[in-house]
Length: 223
Ligand SMILES: [Zn+2]
Image (tube, rainbow, N blue to C red):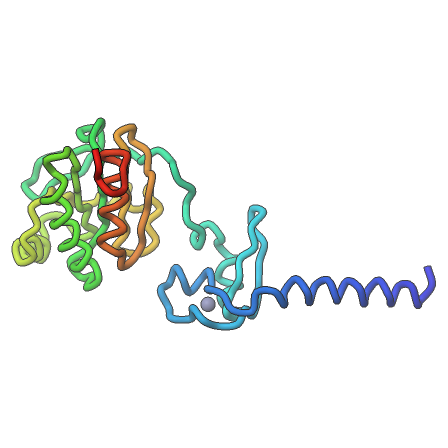
């Protein structure tokens, strides 16, 4: 191979690469999205390929974080089987996922120190009132420690009536559900499959539509 032909190959490779990276100028950083930092409208500074998928980052440091632990930054695939759990309720009883088999279930992960969790809980309480007669169940799994008075105060202050469970410290349910930040919400089908998941502040109407679809098979609720 001559020096010139080698040079041409390098040049054409560079052209292909710049065309590939030049297409997506603005995107959502795959790390900032999870860490809920406001880097959404920034130029792509770096990219990584993981499991046949290309992820874009706002900075080299975000790329380094991703490369260090990609699974942390990608949404787990749905549908998937909802992991079983047996946890202590606010009243001190035991409750399990198995108790809700055959019902559509929303599981909300929250903590009393999490300010954005309050809005989600108020929305969920409204959704619970709206759909409980149609056999929707909602449970809130708190990361607070068992018997925490803050938890009780929080529930009373926000008039939450759906069951609250304390997560297990030694084998955390949040870990099994791959919770990355709270609030995190999971919609479980009658067959025990996670069919939708939301992280952070979610639109109430979007949750309602997903619940209605599971309950009736219709988004608008026409029977
Ligand atoms: Zn970033």
